[in-house]
Length: 597
Image 1: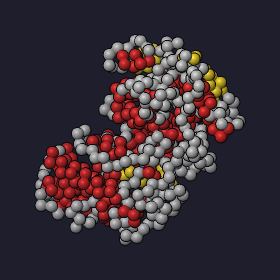
Image 2 (image 1 turned 90 degrees about the vertical axis):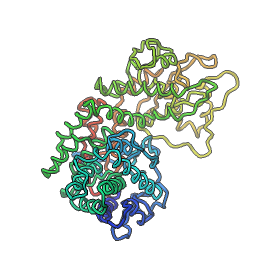
Image 3 (image 1 turned 30 degrees about the vertical axis):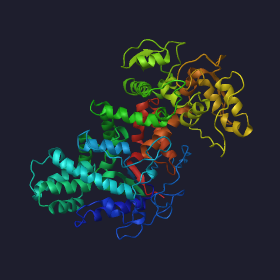
């Protein structure tokens, strides 16, 4: 949510609405439905009038004048161009924001909040996928029907939690409706659900709601339900405090939430919350050393490392478009690609990424050039490799001539970027061009038939694709995709190695045609292409671009300052995967904000 007038209005409105004691089915979300467009993202001021907003162009979901009800702003189809940095010291952060938890973050937070993986998780939110991710802050809003569903779920969950898990919601060893007992409950649960201690005003409002009930359990249900519906729970606020010069320093708890959701995809654990509590009590922010210490703890602690591994894979699946493995339709008459085999393919890729990033402290180049992988008997049979048996993944070394090295020879990538029957040099080349090199391509002109036509007599996929794009109107863009994709032609659309197709030998020579000022690179096969990409500075910068977008949920004016700072920090550790991740926490944007447009 770009518009700070929305952020300010939301925070002030929430503090006033929470005191509406007459609403027995209290819901900040429901009460906000009376505002413009019936949408939390289009919040009015506390007097019911629309807030003053400034449009950022293209339809801003926080601007009542630019986005009709029920519609989303147009989302980018390619990573936006870098907004050049004009600050010599790279100290310019982005605007203050409020962004809703994604589906993954919401579900993980609910499970951790109630310390119970069996808690009911509703299908409330439908996050739009933007650039392969569901993290775009401008696409995550709550509208009328969703708000009603949130209310229903919150009431049901509050009833379940207080009935079955009351002792886990508070440290108070009491259940009497007196000021001390209910106060402890409100402060304990409120601190965890909002990821920060309650202000005295908000505490007083919740205390009034609780005290209006005769029984402790009934008051607890009302408060739990209210808190689960509050935007303080459903949204992450990155507002900060004014430190002068138009700069706002994020609070310790805002930084703690940013760090936790960046590294684990869920709410801060107790250790991180306590660190934020101590800093807030001293009236200071979390220092860079404290942030680094907490980050390393999260990545290394056996209790939190699995969460970090899963969060890294969410980024990698989105950046490398690995989720296409699940959604790409295949022709089962050619080969029956079972769901089990698809899961094994994804497990192989995850095992390699986790091993390289966490166990070897490796780089993305190491992933591209890895001479080993993790397979079981099913994958071994599919790939035509030996050295693995049973259902568990086993590390095996890839010998020369068996198969190409690295991530780009994995079934997860090759299968996801292939057609129903034929391999797709276009899809595979486009992925390399747009996701690894960050070089956008023009969309195809309207009315183009994308279907590859068969040729008379025996023909390889390469021959058919070459004929298909022979027209000058197509070749202008396809020259930047297909010649890269031709290097993958030793692999069919299911990721199986082949030396020939339709009785004709495979030609896996390819070319990376560079922009006008660059130098073209000719190669043969995936291994040579992977070596080229492993040495490319463009790939390193591209990873920073996508990871920054995924972490911060947006791009902004002068975002080049953030990218350059992250690149500088990551370069000090040779762009090791974890160092790129942690470099995000050392960018000015991680702890500071500006007022925004």
